[in-house]
Length: 341
Image (spheres, rainbow, N blue to C red):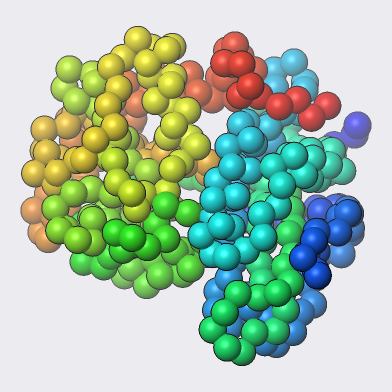
């Protein structure tokens, strides 16, 4: 298929409408058959559940062109499972896993001309999401819902190369211990907006959120999990019931253990330990890994030995291996890659 006439190498990380998107509606206790549509505008009641009580969940994944020229997605089954958990937590109907996967495949196929070519540094970002669409004035779940999937070509999350980030330990809490931090709900991101704008205003790239109960343990940022490297090359990620289970982070832990032969550990990470780590990174769909060079704890600078110029050596190996798997340069574990066409 002939690709769109786009300057792929200069794409930013921003929304660009493509040809088709998938839509399914839940009414009278059941999902309809769903369809692809060219209509990008949504019309709903002014009293829709999503508008009144933030009843919305979403996922994010990417489609890639491999070295062999195939269009693939990376572990979409885990996105389907995570969205199921999110739906249950917000009292929303589950969109079946098989239909979720089929909707993703159909959306990517219908927008194949928008999938950036191999080597361009760009990818097709795929956004499945669901929201309460019927009118709700009392505080309760909506009765009708819409599930949609759109796709948009994006460039690298950090234009001009990845530079280590400067983080601040936030005085705001991201999620309560028994709250919604472990699901991908829109409301989690809304409550982080003031904190991230404040961080940017103060000269920081991101926030480091601590646990809300004791404010002594590292949790995550507004949109990514943490990954630390000890001085003896052990890969450590924070463990908490209010952390979103990042698919990228879980994949990196497998890569670390099975591909690089590194010891991995998921455990509580105390703030006092930060000074002892050799490297730090943020992991998520958008950038895979973003290196962190420094964390500022209320004026006290905690600098990682990996520095502020480039990724640390272990973080770089993790990044290179996972992106190699995604792009088809390195053999993937069974079930990780779904071939679209």
